[in-house]
Length: 493
Ligand SMILES: Cc1ncc(COP(=O)(O)O)c(C=O)c1O
Image (tube, rainbow, N blue to C red):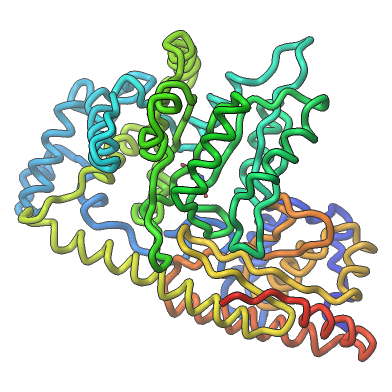
């Protein structure tokens, strides 16, 4: 009997379909272990999302030393001098010199100015202005503001946003909440998940008549694909957006984590300004960055920002007014953003530790990604495109028909059923591709690889054991299906 033949009644009854359902199941199993239930594993390991501290990645010391900002601590000689000086400076820019005060709803002027200077440096002199920067409670909060602003009013055709498949699992619910139609465009798996221009045109044509497509969302470096666009690909998307008069929504939160050989991060804004005035003065662009980035990974402090480029001043006024309703982003998060973009400089007492910690993050990420990709590609019935950036791998599961039938009976997606069984049998929580928008018989897993190396080893051991056991438990007839599926894999490692 295959290990998938037994379907958990919890799932049968309620249907595990969303990321939240799997999350609840993980929490339930953890609770059962706490209550003394015997499991073949001691704890659940969650690599389904980019919550990096959860899996044991350490915070950056400089950030943590700074954000306590308890005034009396500034006298403590145990803290490096640059930390104490910087903390004092940051306290001075808080209202009432306290972290407990509200800030302007678009963000602290000092931090917005720092962000504009950071972007100007990053983009080799392409100017950025504080008035175009809006700080929010995470980049997702900022995205929500924009999506709500472009959503349709009653009586108008529904606004549509072109959205990658696969894309971030948080995106479909966000668009849904804003009342905006998701217009899917398929990324090209056999080309390492590249964006394809013909596919963008196809998606747009298919959507017209059904809704009013007004924007295109891009995740670069890609979540969950790990793809990093080159300049040519970015130019194509910009030309497409310009020709079709679409607002460009570019999620660049993993800009600090590109590790593919010969690849580097190029921001959409920089490429836009290299394309001449025809584009740089007309194409409407909103780019997003976050404290939840790979190197900072301070997701829980809730701060991110967006930069508005070529957006009408009247619209910017609406953005500011809209943000007033949220009061302001947490002050600790806003100050941590300032630290993210202005880390200790060479020669500062904190610089050595900071540089070592960032290097460790980058090395861990690239080594883990390569190790995990090789491991996954060596498993029968699994293929994984090489990632170039971001924090996820997105392997394809070539599932035998028996499992697919089991899922149909249980009324869940086959990849969700796989994830559920993996969670219950081995205590490993990975995301299911159907939650990233994958449909049409393709099955994938979403796996965060920025975790401590020994945690990754544990995840791979448990995943491999589950996967092989699953395939072994299939009937001989199904093995024929599996072998066919495996032969059709496109392994490009
Ligand atoms: C594509 C993408 N955008 C944004 C975020 C972060 O959102 P926020 O800044 O709201 O924490 C993540 C994950 O952390 C992500 O993967």
